[in-house]
Image (cartoon, rainbow, N blue to C red):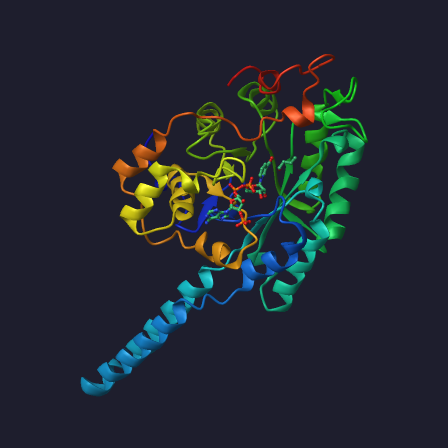
Length: 359
Ligand code: NDP
Ligand code: 1BO
């Protein structure tokens, strides 16, 4: 598969079908726990101190240069400094991915509020959330979104996703007991989500964890930006190709292989990282970007939050990109088994069935 940089509007954004831009890298928040508010605020507003010494050196050099050569060159100093400041500001995260089911939307809301109080404009942020399976009935869609908005302290969000395409009964167990996993009214729920867009509560809507079969069903009545698990250890090519065919943008979740299959220690990834003088995390994130997906790595560690954003201004050479594409033993991390499989009573008796036997 060839690198797909051409799909991006610029290095920092991709464009959704609606024409809205989605930041290429966002902050994941699943299992971010009690550090969430701090992580969100840090990701958005952190001053990337690594840039400051360079700024000082360049300014000093420019001053020497202007003094020595000609006063007419003085504007170089301010242009140079301004460019550095612009690059520096662009290093901050502007996209946060969360979900009602993560149980941390209030914390995310606190982090967003702190970032906005520090001077970040709401319109420059891109906030994604997801409707949970217990609310996948048309009459619950709007109240679920309203609850999310209240917790996030926002009056709209940028992207609202169906988290998984199965309805769960309130209080469903993990794994589910008989009768707790239900088919959902996909078209009815989608119509309600479209109304949220019409009413200005949500800018874009989309889906997660859809098989090609389910995507094709929904596409009979919708255009959507889905989010799917994607990393070199699970390229998820079938759904990726189906989305490409329909011009649908994909966000790669668990881009590092999540905590269960963290690919930062994969020898192939490590070797390429050493060669490129980048970290394994940066190589995995860059691989996803060059493939044409936006990406939402999660970290609660300040250093990694910064590291994961320093993926612009360089490329993985095509030969290394292809080596990463060739990593074997592909497997999903998130099979949905714990959430939706009841081996005795069904309706899904195996993880394969959850994915319409497409894996
Ligand atoms: P990731 O692939 O982002 O991996 C997160 C793990 O990698 C954590 O253990 C983290 O630890 C560690 N990590 C972070 N940065 C680095 C680095 N530079 N080097 C090495 N290790 C690192 O997994 P997630 O499953 O969290 O996926 C990302 C986000 O995608 C989620 O948080 C969520 O927002 C979204 N998502 C959406 C789903 C959906 O159904 N729509 C499903 C799954 C995820 P630490 O925090 O200690 O740094
Ligand atoms: C159960 C939630 C999986 C991460 O989105």
